[in-house]
Image 1: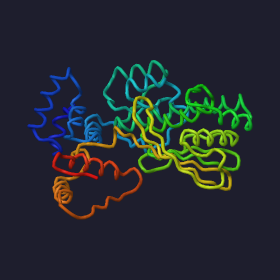
Image 2: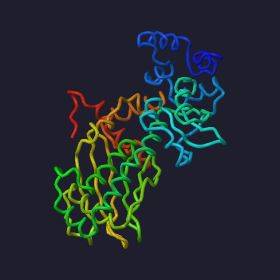
Image 3: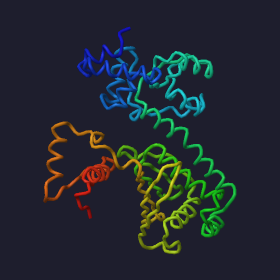
Image 4: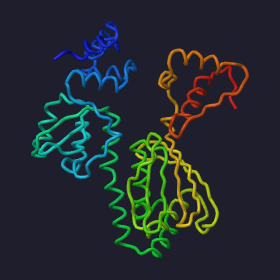
Length: 342
């Protein structure tokens, strides 16, 4: 089997001196994988490495974001095993289990999954980010669904609303608090930019916007909606009695060790109040300029524009495209002792 480094050089993605430098780093990092070193150093993207691995191993590369995962496949292994090996069961092919892996040549991981599931494994390749997102999306739902079931079992709708109005942040074991927290935590874990909590005639639907695309993650009985709205209003400092006009709020909090800004918006509809929560992880906003993904030409052009003594810069793009990230990164770059930023 041809070495990964040779494949990358032959394809024109890597220069020989870059390979030598990466191999030297590999020796200093206790055998860290070559692909990970090239990705972490910004020399290549994770997708470029995966496509090279596909060529090397003859194992198909898949875009996990475009695949519908069989509901029963993830249940064959635990979340801990999936995270440890960076893999995701997605489907069945006869008696075989189709598993997407970040390292399809990891024989130890394949043998472990074969032993646990009792099935032969048919591997696929995808990027680490896509696999981690799929793990969080498919294993993280259970926590929210459990909170929904507890909410259904313990309270009727009037009791839920009455208790929710009395809840403080210290009452973390209340079912509605668990439900709202689990929805927000799940959204943050899969890097969602927005949470949509929508009332319908018989259900409450929760959708998350990931990479600009809305995807449904759970639904709950309509009875749970009133308590959820009240809880969101409380944490956002809104009027819980007002149901006829739109309301906005903002929360700064820390979830799972990450500082998060949440912009809350509540809009009355025919079926009840619709909630939209915009998530912005403060630690994720400011990047290095190199991490913005600009070409060398565009980066030089951008530098010339932002250092101009006058003018207006318009940054536009769809949700989640990086408008705020771009602006904060530029401000960080301009924030010098000789510059006044208002």
